[in-house]
Length: 232
Ligand code: FES
Image 1 (tube, rainbow, N blue to C red):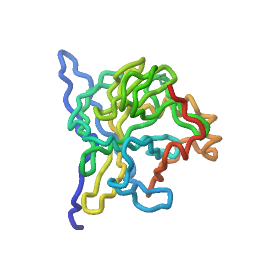
Image 2: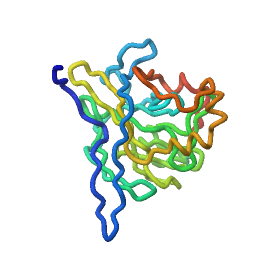
Image 3: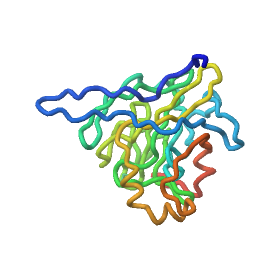
Image 4: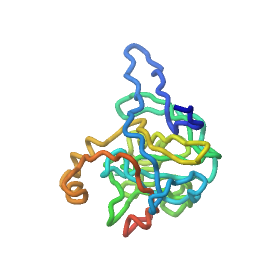
């Protein structure tokens, strides 16, 4: 098999905790199925075609777990040292694509698990500051105003969230400009999410709460996916 030219992993290397006596375990990447990101017509999504500062959504690694795909319109940081709520350290290594501006995160708020549904979304990327949101270019959860920096590994900038948003690991094929989701890095909250919303998720997903995504994941604008976005 030919060696593919690519690939930067959007957030990758776990690092050792700067540990005193009893170091916590590192937050290692969790690998899932390698899934091609495609547009609404099923065509491979090119990184260069992702509009800047728009909320795009796809579901990964489960059909019920939403993620944001963002072109920040500027390079993300190349490295961020982060820590989960249970004190596991990890290093996120930046965006992918030509300008390293493409990033992806779980859209499940790390505070109390607000997430975008077909009906409503309290959480989304905001490029503009507002009366209630003094920070621009953040992922803001209007439930209790947790704000995360998508250019810095999903770091918490404000609000009660106890840890960054979990990053979605992206591979970028430099030759084709295609994108693949391959795993997660950081504090996954899937188990808590499934437990909290089990009934709703079952209704929304044909009775199957934890069906893994394989092959391809469709990326669409949040506005198309969700009937109402709460702005704050
Ligand atoms: S659920 Fe998002 S801030 Fe509370």
